[in-house]
Length: 250
Length: 250
Image: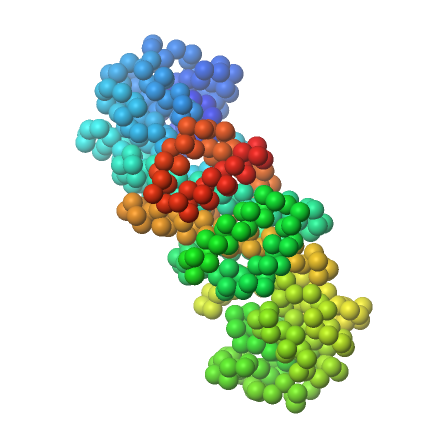
């Protein structure tokens, strides 16, 4: 059981606090620059909140789950005798400065009102000290069956990959939504296909699962699609560049 | 119960025949230009095969499930007194020529060795005659709970959207696979995120579910990712154009 000071009250802080508490850990206090957010999360957890970083209750670890660009500011205000971690996918371990430092990065997309099951969420850990790494490993394993030790460089490439499979795929869903709306087609028709596309890659490689006109080098269909996109320069350009990329891989 | 002549022995023909047979319809014969494929599918179904299109057993409908660019060739060889449909997402109804004609387009990605459950697969139908449309509606409803009447134009926009959510998302998985391999990271780490991304859009809109550096206008992280991609011109270009597209929508 660890005593945890949670810094931040956004999506990651909220979901992570709840998972940790559910698995027997104690959230000693919650901090947020925006006091109403701190109060809101502390009420969810039934713990106290604070708006001070330099005078906090005794704890075993401080988890900094704030926006990337304020992590080092927050870290510099903390008492260095507390081991600290950040939860960022992109930021180097080193930005936390001196002391016992580490990374505790849960690789998932968190939305405010969507409950996530941490059991399967990969947690990537890193530390500047083997004893602390062991501590983080135990903490991560207490909420997830999917814990990995990664260097800062590997983590940044993983985060880049995550942007591709998550944000860029989601952009494809957005563009499809726009096309469907414009042509009075229900987006619901695409939902089973979206589900199957993500299911397939759980068991097969993305190279094996690829289908479609570009994979088949079906120039006629590609030309037809480009014509359909004639009035939408941006989508046409995206269609062209992604099709070319699949052609290059086929 | 319909008597169906199945033309084609590829993925669509195979999965569709099996679903129709399972739901009480009779596949009278299978045709394929490649005789070994016709034999293989006819054995799976326990029916006969033929390599003639102009002299076939009595049936209620011929389903043309062949490559897009040979549909009209196949249709022109068929006896016009049989109602015919094609299964293409892109081709107009009219390419089937004279007679009683229609479209029976199952919107899903089919792989040889992956069983699919037709119950939830959207089937888009179209016909040049209201009685035949009713026949197709009954046939489609006998294997799926998700039947829609769409015009040829709507279907072509739907197919374009399907390429985006399926083939282009799958390309994102491929690019992520390449980045992970190069940096000795297991692609498995991304699988829960891929699953969650597709799950979210089943219940929320893609605009609501979007997250990530571009959505947050987090220029620092975007710059960092572009630096990581400095040695890979193609991925860098794709990252740039898709990021710009998300920025424009945020």
